[in-house]
Length: 236
Image 1 (cartoon, rainbow, N blue to C red):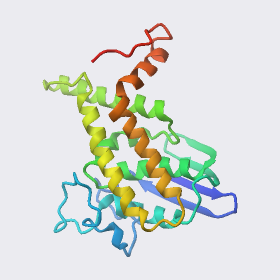
Image 2: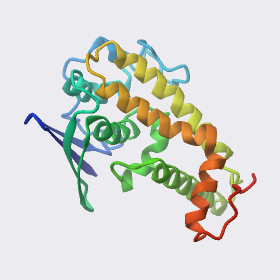
Image 3: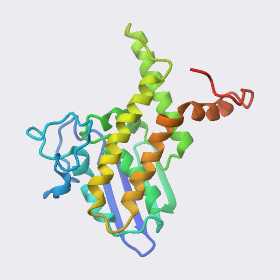
């Protein structure tokens, strides 16, 4: 599946990114990847503490390689600069006037989830129904829904399901460690703050599951129950 992000800055500059969400599983050539990888994309450079890859087998970080063109394009841009973002998916087209940070957060999340990183790849199933510009409530709803569906299929396969969402919290912790390391990678090459703030914004979404999942579910329960639920979150 191919998803296209187009950015048009107020000053007239335009950028287009075609993201093949199956570029690794199909082993097709990715024309978006850099021909000359930068040093900060090397696997051993600020390598994630929970990275399962070996430098001898993977000289470059898969997520960093996929982000290099994005970082280079927006390295000097201000995070709060206004931009028109158009997102084309096989199902529909989205358009929004927003900050560079918001547009980048949405695209970088998709790029990272569909990269060859085995940790970020845990979020890849969300890419099949990509929703650009998701807010915190939407991110939590989609993440929890995906995880519960995965547990249902575990039950169907006669495996023990995790209805208490403990595994989801652990998954989010792994994602946080990767996000922090990626932030360290790109910090040295960004003169502007757009990419850095986009990563931090994405990091805050993941942390909402790690640190306050129960509170987030309590908040969402009101809309799911039609306002009839108690203010208290469901106990685990």
